[in-house]
Length: 109
Image (cartoon, rainbow, N blue to C red; front, side):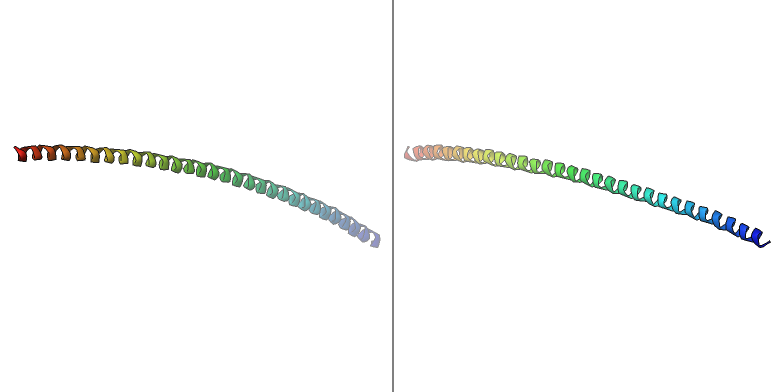
């Protein structure tokens, strides 16, 4: 009877041993898979951050180009306005001189 009980205990211990080994192997495998998934997610996050950064740089370059172009347009418009004011001032001076001459002639006659 002792031998039967000892045999059953041995079989029970062996089965638990195999079950524990299987559990450890599954836990190890799950840990490795989780590590791989985390690594892949990290790489994906890095790629996404790089893409966002590149897009931001492109947008900043585009904005800088727009500001430069707007500045150039403003300078051109200011030059044109200055030329228009100068021409208008010259025309007004010419008209005033012409009127002054007409008044002077009218006073002399």
